[in-house]
Image (tube, rainbow, N blue to C red):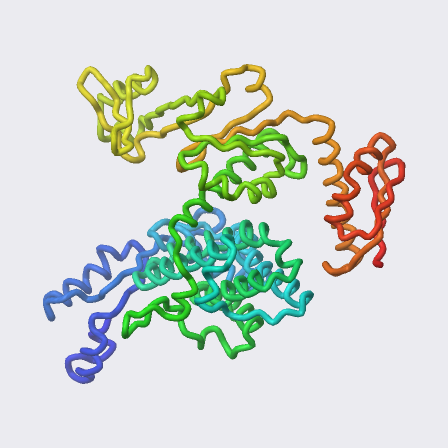
Length: 517
């Protein structure tokens, strides 16, 4: 690369020595034995050193038909159309987060870019919109948190700050080492935490004008935009300038947690305090939520329909039980029971362990012995050693399986057949189980119907252009058989819809009328 372009060694000797070897080089994977190899041979022969410090080796960009992208074939979305419809950040993220930067191939489609908008760009913007909407409604001028305030914050706030710290660390490491896709993965994971966990669980705090909530979200968004700037420069710029009024996020400092010269913790580093125990507990809670929502979906029970009971079987139930109210709110269950794995039997639960051997993967290493391993897994002639590795007991001795060669499946069965018919269970990824009672009584069905009414009212408020702070009078029309259901939960309807008064009348179908007070 740098020999001919500087006319070295005939001139520019100082410039060449300052820039050789280069920080990184980018080329397609076919150049592994081409350009990459030739440069190393030349650099070794001439200077006895590598030609470059890092290499980004990408795969092949394919058109929507799976063939190599070609101007002649026009087998790709119109570039200007993509920019106009989805924005340049969406295209940029689609490429950077794809397998192509890990050496794989990539098929470019409009649907793939549209998914990036839905999964990344819109959630980020929605978080900013949510913050400005509630902050303006409360008339509160949010600011960055101070280090001495963090210890007094609610656990939800401290969890988000700890996750942000980990994001900064992961992204900085990924970008410093040219792992661009890893940086995108870390940011996507944080977006999920921010939008689908923190904001969802703290709406009432923002509605009540909680200053800690505003300052926490402001601190997180401001810092996150500085992290996001190299990955989604346009959106990060718009959000950051809207938050701070500053000139440009691209002129702001990277959110260093430690001073580069002294190694001392920065002011931001003192605010973004890690808390391993808190993060572990909250991640377990999120697992419980995810597993339970999956069971609801499998049983086609909408989240608005309350259920009677959830049983959580985990290794450390006390850590999860501390967030019982969060779980009840997220999962819409009336009662949650916690127990350890050891106590599962006393609750009428039986834990069943299954081992499935991946014959295709394990066969490459075990060859003929793979059949013995499969038979052992099916007959129960296996155990898990102290390191958590499954070991199959075969005629040729014990065979320890390696990662990727097996799948351990843990499930819960209820010993009482009648109870089992009214429940569904699911294993948690990091150990433990959840059992959801799916039996419905009249009270639960009535509340579920009332929550459907609430949903209809919220949509009517939105259609009427009402602000969050606006109070209303509400008229509800429902079929005659459902009037008693709404009357039973009239107070709930009034509270969740900001209604000063609620009247319920019989009619042909569900309908709502809202009027601003």
